[in-house]
Image (tube, rainbow, N blue to C red; front, side, top):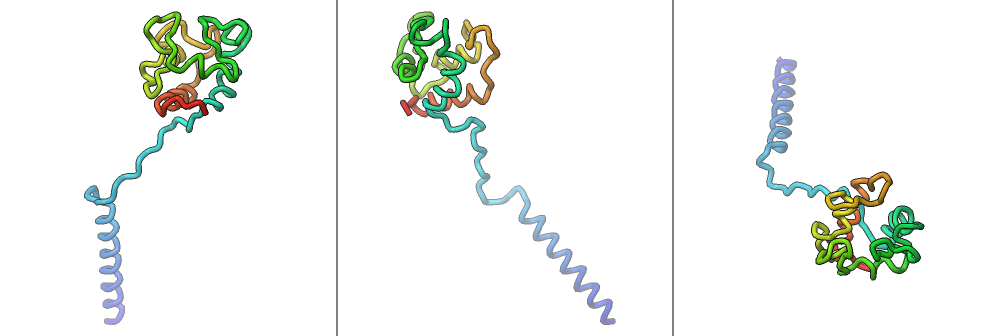
Length: 145
């Protein structure tokens, strides 16, 4: 009789624990879901300058201060003033970087290839993560940081 009582008690305990687990995992949970962070890393102009502009853009015959294709200088210390709220020579009426609005910024359109010529010219496109990082910098106000 004692074994039967222990088995019944044990069975009911397992059933209760299982029902608690099922209830706590139901879709009617009142807790807020954890927001998914953006895949784009936090971007600062200084990072973009050293990891993108200096390597892929501000080179001889491109956007260095001596050559400045399209009047765009992306050399260290000059890129900010050459980008922010400056109208494009190639696309009049379009800002190279429209602070807070990456979608309308020519820089993003050119590096994504939605406007031509896609940059970097005659080279592999920038990775989606790099483009997302630059877009995030623009969307967050395109600070000179």
